[in-house]
Length: 69
Image (tube, rainbow, N blue to C red; front, side):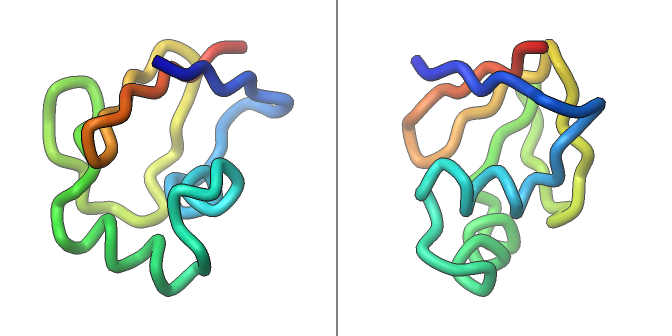
């Protein structure tokens, strides 16, 4: 399990994927989301620009990431 510490109120999903190097590019990040590879708080997240806030828990390709403030 990894934690991601927010420096602002939220971070967009595709930006997080790029920042954590789960996705190699923005295009790759969009494909990961479109293919349903992201589970947010127990539900599949298809919104590329979903605003992730403290307390959100993501599962991406078997890796769990918790958003903290």
